[in-house]
Length: 369
Image (cartoon, rainbow, N blue to C red; front, top):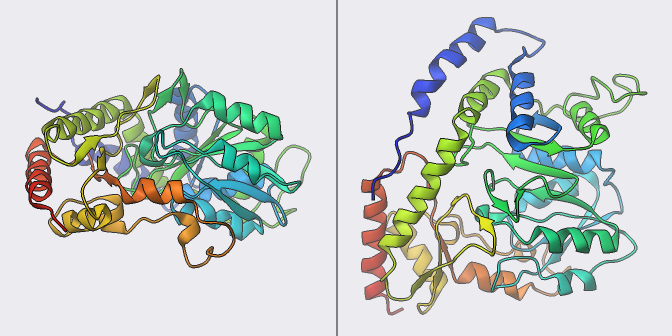
């Protein structure tokens, strides 16, 4: 199998960056971020996009724009990173951790229903590893409990399920453009929404309440500065214009690696959900070997980067700042303990993937711990 050819990001970025750098210093920020927002909205098929400094900032702005604040409770899957939860703390809201179903990786909606209270205002589904839960189940649950949906689609650019793009199911979809994401700019993020009022409030929030939403005065509320810098916006725009090819490449890389590991003992590819067009962000394998987390850590030491082995990813409710709030989310722990999520970038060549496959197969065959 030959991976599709994608022009080097560095080659494509030279001219756009040169144009922006020639215009700096420009206290106005220039026009490139606005152009990026218009093209993001067009590509994702949604009326409004707001570019910000990071994926965390996108969630922060989205939550604020949706009126989430002190005393509110927000349902969050334990199967996520702490960056999803940090903006809630900044706004004075309380995360309520929900378990996930090991068979589907989707939210455990029975567990979520048990945790809804009179103070629950929103739910943040997290499309970890680019995988997307059932959008109909999510929408039905949110409607039944009158909750705002704010999607953490940081890793899910390009994933579609049942005809709905990740990040367009709820009121707001939030994305990261940090290095390693399929759509990257070094650092950065954006949010998508069909609601003009939400877009206006998020836009004001990212720049000290200016321009202000309709009917309000500039600087009339305290906000923050999380604008996307012009050079990073130029990088993002160049990559957005080759996004289709970047998604095709990531899917091809993932297919290649999973095919190479098809006969490896103790490892089984984790297939996408029904009607899910997965972006292939991270090749996923279920580890059926003894002491699976130690196996993932061992692979990281052997040069195969992965979520649990390299970054020691654990259920968010198990982090020190959250322990004791709820009963442990055992489904999320089971998923993480038994999942090999291999980290890829567009720079990973077929040679790199074949080396990963050889190391994984060799270590799996010899693993007895």
